[in-house]
Image: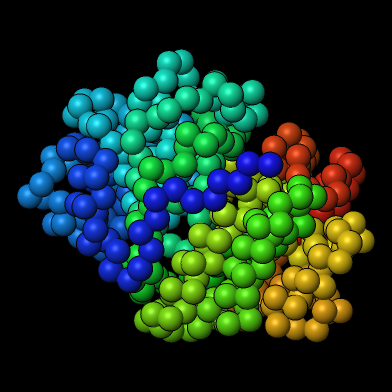
Length: 376
């Protein structure tokens, strides 16, 4: 069993100030920085520009969509090549970091992006990419320390790209970058981190260190109330620190895999009309899948409950629903614009998702339909 959880993380308040040091240590001179319009509009990208202006010749791609697309990857890749860049930096939420990983991949790989997706048998085709650095500004995906990336392709599918070579060369994790993040985005991202921890623990893969990390992430999110506190007071530095660490831990934990929650949210996230937030989808779907898996995971529910700081015999699905309500998550997929006529297409997508490889109980087609209906 090969265990590989961390790259080169710089985790502390104010860590963003180390960006020049990190770039120099990797021999970088001309980075492409991938971000999104939201961060640009509030001046966040200006912070990086100011920090590296004197030492580096940088380029910026600031059009990353909420769910990164193949089209956006190609646009950023064109900018990378046009400006003769030598590194890609993902600055933002999981979308910007996932997009940066895909750009770093295609900067020195032949063919089309889709050729390298797990769904199309591309795992073993990925070799060393150009240097890539991740700087998260949300606490949810943990993409800064994971080997994966999610991209919505031109054909409408949301596909997974995974390889040890997609692990960023360095991660700058500065909890202060998340201060002021709106409560609804804090909540959605936080539920993404929580779902990562829970689904990783429920995965049947035997990896005790990863499971222990997942337990600690749950304790930080719920038992220590980091998520509720960060939603209530965006300036709470201790809560922001706890959530960023839990987010990182969630990604470390899911080295042992995810499950049906992610298969369903990937299917829903591929809808380019609704443009649904991944973490919010996980929050809404999680209770239904917890009920579905309940009798197929041994004593893991009691261990999760204890990590949450509640009685080990508590109903986890009900507890998650209470938490969702407390932090302002939608109560159903219907509230998010999903309709029953979409279910056949969603089931077709969910059935093929690689997250199913580590789900503790694989649904039949009829059971997939019931899970989507229950989440409605």
